Length: 112
Length: 113
Image 1 (cartoon, rainbow over the protein chains, first blue to last red):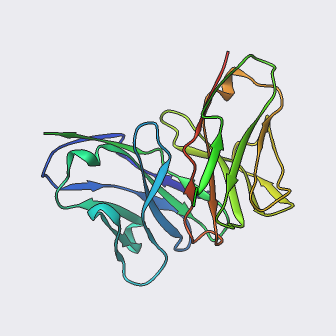
Image 2 (cartoon, chains in turn purple, cyan):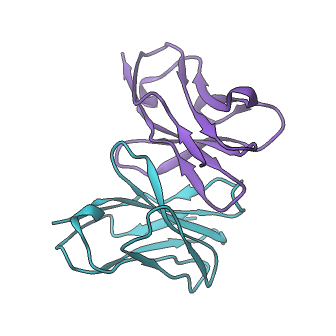
């Protein structure tokens, strides 16, 4: 069955530190891959997406993600976290259908 | 552009009551979906539509109905509300199939007592 796993429920980092949020998927082919961010009480905002080509994709707010086919992973990274990055982050996968399947999310807390 | 507009933002229902959550988009997107978000479970797909007059079930469709009479609107109906339907509901739309990435509304927080 198709699935998306975000193994980290909660991550805490200091402001200025680097960040990596993990995402793994289970599927027989390469899907479409997305990262969304949700601030408290808000909807979801698209950070970046991968369809094909260069496996390192750049998104908004200084985020990037790298697709690794061999590991079925699409990890989100940021070199220096800002306090405003505190939010919940969702990895999502589209399997050439009209549906997106979401991971359970990772809550990021940033300490000054 | 307003994007995806959901109404109401908050709602309290009694068990057994029915209601409709409204969703409208002004981006001429063909694809629209409804998700519910529950703590620790991410977003789960309830129903989706690939165009006016076409709808299909997602992962958790029981207790919900949808219709798509126009491209712009995709209402979600709760037929007989149950406490298990207490959740935050998000409507989303996309121009292209699968690959486009969805634009989300700001959500409706529903409590069933």
